Length: 150
Image (cartoon, rainbow, N blue to C red):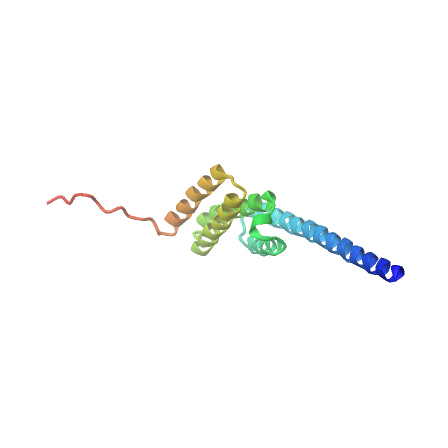
């Protein structure tokens, strides 16, 4: 009987060790995907081409799949912000409204991550960037006048 219990506890410890190693490997893979995204953003900036940013978006999405939003590392939020910045810059340069929409979406995802990390100053800066992107999209909110002139 003791031998049977010992095998069970060894098997449970082995499964626990494998699960821990899998989680560590997933975390490293997610950070590598974020690094690929950062390199694609850099390439897009050097070539003034929007094409590498598609791969950056896909890599970031894949990296975020390894984490819940609450557990996402700060680095992924930083890359998300850089993606938005580059999409906005190149989208304005090429007059590509689709790229500007993608920039706004990237900023919104970065706002969520900044909120979860408790970074209020980053969240406020990103909200201004969302408003800027929306103004380039023609979604500027018009404030109605308080008084009409007769």
